[in-house]
Image 1: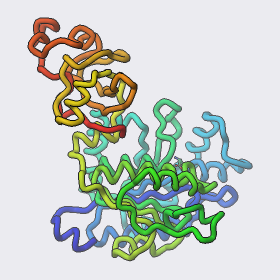
Image 2 (image 1 turned 180 degrees about the horizontal axis):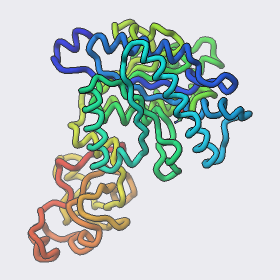
Image 3 (image 1 turned 45 degrees about the vertical axis):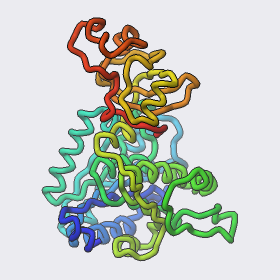
Image 4 (image 1 turned 60 degrees about the vertical axis):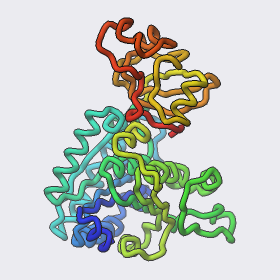
Length: 377
Ligand code: GLU
């Protein structure tokens, strides 16, 4: 890690995600020793000049213990109330632990909209930048108390991947109660082996994730793999490792062969395309014919009106839309230059006819290549 810092000559950002199963217990509440060990390891990374953001679960778990509930509530208002009780207790534990090292921390509670709505995304990024300039360790959780179904991410694995992408991090470390990703469920098959390095997330790896289910965490390996997939496409290395081991963070950052490492894709998307591919939320869709499909997939061209067959949904210019072929296969997504009603008028027409139809000085492509991402991400 030290060498990497010198080679790039710019600050390295690491995002660490820690799950409820490591932090909270329904009888005793927050496991203070774990929080303290984590704070100590994070401060050691800080002293090497690294920027660290921590995505921490445990609000609902801490709330369950504080309210002396028998189990995690299942109804949304009760869950939200429990998170509201537990979140300050979680932060109190972090504040006490980090204070011993004079390390300032900050609480950041996010919802899905903070990522999918572009100006909120940029705003959040600026706040993180300012916090890092002040030398703060931001501690992030989903804003469970207000996040109803439509704006909920639902699990902190995916949240941590979005944070890692937002911060253009070098690495995302997902700490859990197992020492990595296995080729079978180690709780059932004693011969299951830990996979040390994943060079590419293939469909076979995805099938394995469905077998690696931990009862205690929200999403088990499935959501961890989703998180890894988002990150590797953005050029971020992901490590899944055992958070019960207090020396795990220094082992990972000093390059010891612990956990499972997912190597970043060599075909890293540029920042703007990363947001379109990995974060944005399409509000409608465009269906294209086989000629347009060939042009965007093979010839790497922009999407022109001539190949558009149909429009789905109602959207404005500059919204994000899906692109499908006539058989319903997802081809990609992008930022449209026209609203759905304008596309209804110009579909099947030549680019040279656009201006006279829409009545303004319009671009000749419906989605410019720079705003177009191919694939079903
Ligand atoms: N945000 C939830 C909490 O703090 C945790 C979600 C998760 O574990 O993925 O309790």
